[in-house]
Image (cartoon, rainbow over all chains, first blue to last red; front, side):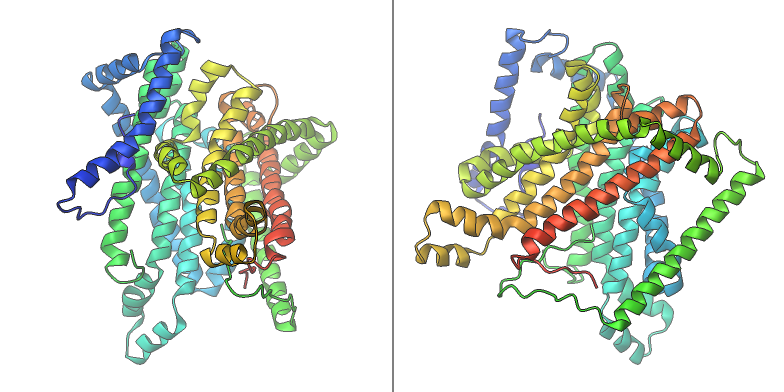
Length: 275
Length: 283
């Protein structure tokens, strides 16, 4: 659980000279993890459960270290992130396109809305066996499923976003002589962007959840989900826990580094929302 | 997802459901269009399935799917699967409420509790519940217990977070006003804080149920037992029974939809909307 420092609730960038304050915040955030770690360690050492199933933190740390040094863990993580990004890119392109179309054209809305509202509420993972059946095992169905599942929040939010662009902005841009292209580029897209970004955020979170499970089901050769699932067969609980820790870290990084940054550079700068 | 919780600070003005003819016409039009689109989509599917360019076992025709659905409904197996799934999801979900709501309230009311639990919650939250399935299978074996714990894990965090932000967002003016009018702690809690936080709590319940519903299907696939909708779908893959899969998918979608609309919708109407805490934001 070395990710405690990351969990600090968004310390502002300009901390200034108040180092002491900073250290106190980190300490305060670390404290609960220490308590949990101590409890874990005590339970593990007392051998309430078999050591094989409930390893000490030391063992988890060493297997984490061993796997990282051998390059196994990074390879798994790399494949997983690659799969996540390709699936998500697919979802972003298709989802934003459909969503914007739905927001701009009545006809597209009539066509897509019923389909989307029927398909979206079914849990994404329920489609997994169907996809596996249709597209075989391996990478392709996994990426496709991740894309398919994370597409829905993106569609919904882009659609809402485009619809939420103020009519008066559109009309004043038109009055000032903006053609369709400029209208789209300079009015509609920036106006809808906060919603689109929210959609992408939700989509990425869904993609992440589904991906881990799909990797277990689709028998992909590399991937964190597969690592965890495979480790179960050998009762390698320490390997499993290492994988889970890495998954948590990647999840946190995605949220903190990718989305908060994008939001800062685009919507906040354009003054669409105040951060 | 489409719901927007708005705490209205003013007196509880509610939208009167005045159905004016224009609105009704628009609704009817949307309904007609939806029917046409869905009809077209189904027809396209049927044509593709009939051409036989894909094996029939992988792409069954709609009558086959419907027949399978009815057969499974009639012999009671679908009912049993649904009951098992519902039992697991509701058990886990109730557990999540029992833990999540009090913890969220405590976190919002007491700084120490918040300082202790917030880092833990934010670190655990990004771990997808499915990542824990293999671990829990090792610890708790295959079957109900693992599934319920996974559901509980998936559902707790939205519950905690929403309750926490709900209680924190209760208008301090109301709390002070109630205090000035002589409400004791007990009354303050039940009459001001809980109703004030209720839109958030109900949003939290919705989100957690959504998560729980996803988690239960996934957990049933991986930590397979002999019953459950997720298990049926996954098991059908082995025998190439795409019709069983599609039939179960329909049931899963239907149950999810029913819960979202009927259970949470009516819960909302019965509490927050009646108290004037929230107006339906549907246009």
